[in-house]
Image (cartoon, rainbow, N blue to C red; front, top):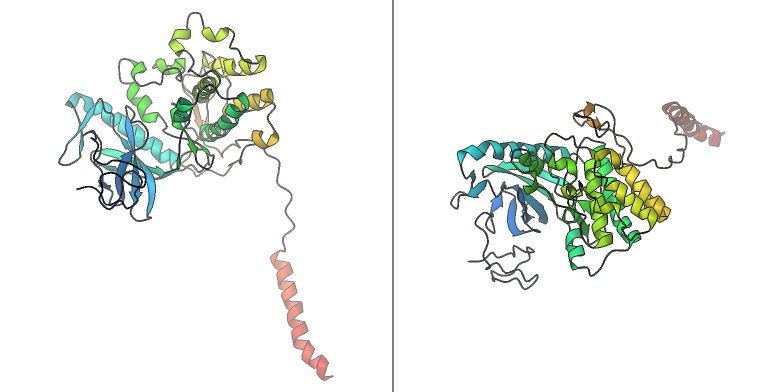
Amino acid sequence: MYQKHCPGCFENKQGLAQCPHCGYDESLPRSPLLLPHGTVLSDTYRIGRVLGRPGGFGVTYLAWDMHLQQRVAVKEYLPRDLVAREPATLAVTVHVPEQAANFNFGLDQFLAETRMIAKFDHPNIVRVRNFFRAHGTAYMVMDYYEGRSLGDYLGQLEGTVNAEAAASLLLPVLDGLQFVHDRGVLHRDVKPHNIYMTGAGRMILLDFGAARQAAGERVESMSVVLSEGYAPLEQYQKNSPQGPWTDIYGVGATLYRMLKGVPPPVALDRLGADPLEGDLDLPEGLAAVLRKSLGLRPPERYATALEFRQALTEVLGLSDAVATATRSYAVPQDKETKAVAWGTPTDTVPTVRRAGAAAVMALPAPAPAAPAWGPAWLIAGAIVLGALIISLPLWLRG
């Protein structure tokens, strides 16, 4: 018996195997590690098809919010090398007891990062609606957007992307990164498949990599959890500090992929003769910006996403309309949100301070507001008006 509503689009398909609306075929085999079609989580979210390609540490489903009657995306913490799923209960269990500590550590990191991201409101950062535990693991509910990842777009593209077009796509990503960096959060896995292009033209950063990075710190080889070509050198070293410069490398690698048609060389392979020191077959100014964003060691890179953003707009001579951030978003933070002074890339431990949010971009000051009428003026005006109303009949009789 197939679902009445299609797991691929949630339109009514009258129980057919293949949806006449989107073509999704419910009869195709589905991995037993995944939640079955129609599973209801938290009495609210009906699970549908898998969105994108399942990663090593999680899978994202299209789901239907039965209360709000709209589609959402639900990400399940699911480190596939560590766990299996019980068919009867759908519970996620580790293969051997010795793996429980690693699973729980990654789960805690997944939840901690989700709680932090849920506080964010920025057009270029995925919006988290809800999160909860169930079936022995955890789930994050996000807005669902029609569109496709930048990775899918580049995979279907024949050739490379024009430099101005590539920069215009990545500037909003840098805005989003500056926003989260100011609030003490790193993405840790910036790459084309984690940048989503909505049908409305908005670029959105997905899939923050805290749980992946945390789990990777407990395995023998970091290479099993890193995105080759997009991961900087410090992510291969367990004790090397990470900061905004780590995400800047990922954006630089994504820009390289767009301009050259292939990812840059793996960071470890650059320790000898670095291929990026050669001719990149790009305009000299643009090549210099790209090399700096991909500096092998953290101090060689741009210190902030804003600095990288400004360098890109200047070297390409982009118009003010493109170069201006969408919004400052310099709103006060609640007392639980930490702003981080990352220090220099050579610091062993970032210094944490409590402070108001720093502005992402220096935008023109708003025009001065017209003077407001204070309470004293209102009271005086009311007295005068009342006196006129009382005296008007007397004046007319006279």
